[in-house]
Amino acid sequence: MKSAIVGGSAIALAATLSTPAIAHDVRADDHAPIGVMGDHAHKKGEVMFSLRYMHMAMPGSQIGTDDVTPEQIATTVPNRFFGMGMMPPTLRIVPTEMRVDMTMLGAMYAPSDDVTLMVMGSYVQKEMEHTTFQGGMGTNVLGTFQTSPEGFGDVKVSALFPLLGHPEKMADRTDELTLQTGISIPTGSTSETAQILTPMGGTPTVRVPYAMQIGTGTWDLMPALTYKGVRGKIGFGAQARGTVRLGENSQGYAHGDRFEATSWISYRADQAVSFSVRGKFATQGTVDGIDALIVGPVQTANPDFQGGERADVIAGVNLVGTHGALAGHRLGIELGAPIWQDFNGPQMTGDWMLTVGWQKAF
Image (cartoon, rainbow, N blue to C red):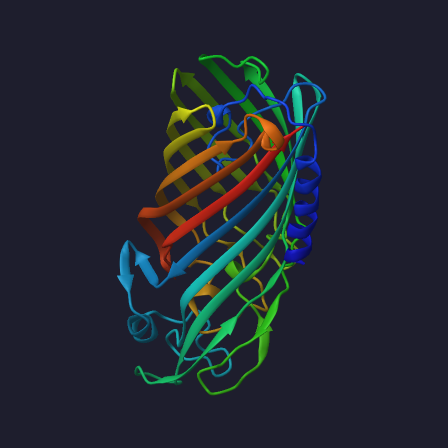
């Protein structure tokens, strides 16, 4: 399914490349770094398409701000479900590595100068490696296994309102303030399953834990406020974004509310090239409620072992075609890593993340 999304977008890109070669009065820093969503509005009648690919790597685990080994988790962290059936007293299945790949296809349309509509869909692929320790106590390893759910994620629909400045008025000195009001539609699956290896040697197929599900299952409000400024070759900006859950999903739980804040500074080396560095802070609460089918001696099955705080530093480059067949086509790349993480209970630690994106307005 991911190849179908990318293939369809490649056809659209090829079609736009065949348009007449004309000069565009565009700059690389007209848009925020590619990982910042909903940073700009459009003028009446304008349409923009975007395609982003994001990869995140998460090796190892932390409790709070401290790194912990699988052996420490298996011997010291209590199992919430101890006493149910043959559940052991401590966690005996430990995730050791997680990877997330997400392909996001978006479209924007401005029915007037005062509002821009935006919709974004995604295809999500997740992989998690686990080590299973033998039942009881000790650190004898029984074996390893992998879970790898994938599918279409939640769809996000929003409207952007330019409160200050306007996208068609670009100059060496300009300021923009954009309000975004959005909603996340629960189209992604919350009932994904996988075959696991239990501490007793069984290999049942069970519902995968919260972080491995494709969607949230809840309707979410997603407000955001973005400021951007340019002073000569220097650009800067900041965005505050929230995700507020509007009740529990059909499985009886809701992910914690999330708040993100990011700010950046950029340098335009040329009309077609700008470089950026930004900081990002995110905080999220624990899961509220519980899915009765997510049960097991593993940290990811405990709703209290979700959420926390994280700060990242991210470097990026924006490229834009100014003439010829590539005029108006944008390519953005960002590479980042966490500098601080504080988690609720044992959780997978972030390592590095990559975002690559293409944008084109018509």
